[in-house]
Image 1 (cartoon, rainbow, N blue to C red):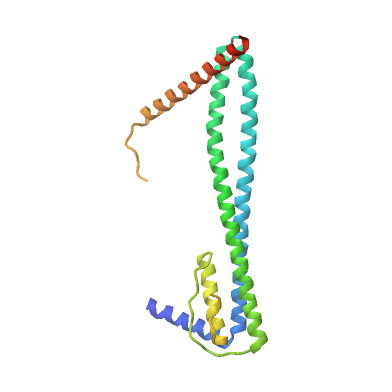
Image 2: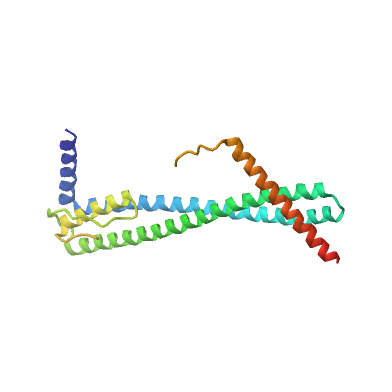
Length: 219
C-alpha cells in the first residue's frame, strides 16, 4: 500500500510538472530560497560562536598577563603561597584557553564550510532562474511531457530534492535535461589523582623557573 501511495504521489507531481511547468518551476525556486535562508541562519550562528570564542580568548589572555605581574610581585616579597595560588590560577586559565582555541577553530571551519555551501546554493539558484527565464522566453506557456532526469548531488538533501524536481519540470517543458566511543574501565578516582599530580608538577616547575629567572636577574 505504501509503495502504491508513493507511486501515486510521484505520478501526480509528474503530471503537474507536465501540465503547468512554469508554475511548478517557480515554486521550486521559492522553496530553494527557503533553503538558502536556512543556510544564512546557520552561517550567522557559526559567526556568532566565532565572535564569542574570540572575545573569551582575549579576556583570558588579559587575565593571564595580569597574573604574571602579580606572581612576580609575590615572589619579590618572598610570598611563595601567594605566588603558588597565582600560578595555579594561571594554569587553570591556560587549560580553558586551549579548549576555547579549539572551539574557535571549529567555529571558523564551520563558518567557512557553510559560507561555501551558501555560495554554491546561490549559484545553483541563479542557474535555475536563468534556465526558467530561457524557457519562458522561448516557449511561453509551453507544456509537453518528457522523461524525468536525475540531478547531481546538491549542498543538502532538501536542495537536491528541489533541484531534481526543477530538472524534471524543465525536461517536461523543453525536452532538454535541466541543470545538472567506547567507555573506559579506568577507576575515576585514580584518574582524578593522576590529573591532580600532573597539575602539581606543572605548578612546581613553573615556580622553579620563575625563581631561577628572578635569581639570574639579580646576579
